[in-house]
Image (cartoon, rainbow, N blue to C red; front, side, top):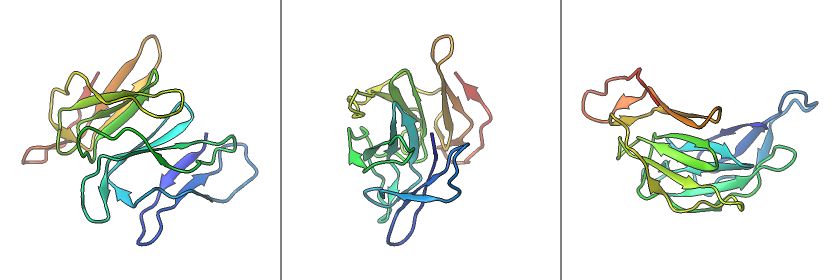
Length: 173
């Protein structure tokens, strides 16, 4: 798999792919651009696809968009296509994938929300379903999933959604 970085600019929003270990190519490749410029979004990989979730667009609007891009055999993403939108606009949320599902956690405006969608064989997503909420209202947290001896979903760190903006060091499982 290749490392992927999303760039934000004024006219183009390229997706660049870093060469993986053991490759002879030592240059960045330009892949198909996202459908629109976005930041404070979440990005993850599951079952051969990259997913771009939510974020803030060029006009400052929070987005519900979810786009997917198939990863080719050379590690380069293909064209981005829309799939099932988030239930509500979301930014700075944690995201993880495990056992054929994508998860989003926390974020703005719904800091305790945890939702998941099943990844279908086409890469498209089922509808988003609510899961057990987080014990604290957080934004900017990291989500990690581990598929060993069962499935574990971790919500790590973050910042209070409420006034005060306290930083968190808790790890929720």
